[in-house]
Amino acid sequence: MDIRTTRKGVQFVRTADANFVNLPDYSFAPNYIEVDGLRMHYVDEGPRTGPVALLMHGMPTWSFLNRHLIRGLAHAGYRCVAADHIGFGKSDKVIEDGWYTIARHIAAHRTLIEQLDLRNVTMFCHDWGGPIGLAQAAEMPERFLRLVILNTWLHHDAFSYTPALRQWNAGWKEGGFFRLAIPQRMSIGDLMAMATGMALPADIQALIASGTPKPLTSTQSRICRGYAAPFEGLGEAGLAGPRRFPLSLPFDNPEAGAAADQAQYFETLKSWARPVHFIWGGADDVFTEAWGRSWSALFPGASYDLIPDARHFLQETHADEILRTFFARTS
Image 1 (tube, rainbow, N blue to C red):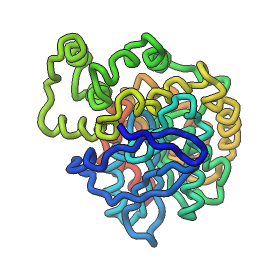
Image 2 (tube, rainbow, N blue to C red):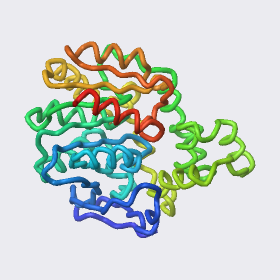
Image 3 (cartoon, rainbow, N blue to C red):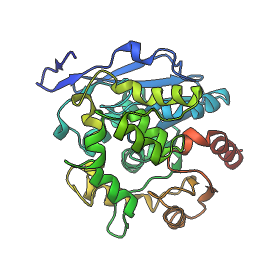
C-alpha cells in the first residue's frame, strides 16, 4: 500500500484504478478536483446544458449507489453530478480517523459546487449526504432549485435517534461488531449485501464465524464487489472514512458531527420556499417513516411519497420507483 502525503502533511492512500474495472452499470468517465491537496472524484454525466442534478451519497457507499438514478436522469436530459466524499469511492482516502469531520465534508462539496459553478440545482441527498448536502442549500440557496430528500436527517434537539442508529454507532467503536469484523472477516460489500437484503444476517454471521460464503447470485456478487471496490487492498488504513461517519453522529460526537451547525441548517431550511420532495423507504429502521412524514410536514407544499418495502439503501433496490415518483412530481 502506497501512503502519500499532501503538502500540509496529511497522509492518504489512493485506490488502484483496476479495482473499478467492469463494475455493473457503472462505466462513467472519472472527473477530479483537488481539495486541500487531495483528489476528489465526481461523475459528470448528461448534457452540460441540461438542468443540474446533484446526487449525494452517505456511508458506506459512493457514487456507485446512485448509478441507476444517474442513468435515468441523464437519459431525461439532466446533467448529473455525483461526487465521492473524501475517504470513499474513487476519491483519496486520508488514513487518520480524526481528520474526518462533517465540516470538512461540507467544505469539500462546497468547493465542488463553486468550482463547477453549479446553478439551478436539484439535489438528491441520502444518509450522510443529507447533512452534507442540505448544508449547501442552507448556505447557498441561490444555487438550488429543488430538494429531493431520501431517508436522511438533520440533527436538532428534538430529533430522536432510533435504536438501530445507536446500535450502528456502537458497532463501529473499539470492540464493536463492525470494528472487529471489517475488513478482517467481512468487506463493505458483505455489509451492503446484508443492508440491502441480498444476504440475511445469518449468512453474514456464518461468513464471519467459519468463512462460509454468502449465498448470492452472480449479479448480486458483482454488485457487492462494486461496493467493496474502493477499499480492496487498502487494509485498516483505507477504511478511516467509513469508520469515522458512524462515530460522528451528533448524539455521540457533537463536534465532529457539526451538531450546532446541523441544528442551524434545520432551522434555516424551515423557511425554504422552493419545491421539496420526500421519497422515503418505509422499511428503514434507521430513518423511519414517521420521522420522514413529520419532517416533510414542516415544508408547506412538500410532497411525501412512501415506497413501503424499501429499506435504507433505496437507490440500490428501488431506483425505478424513485425516478417514476420524481418525474411525476416535476412534470
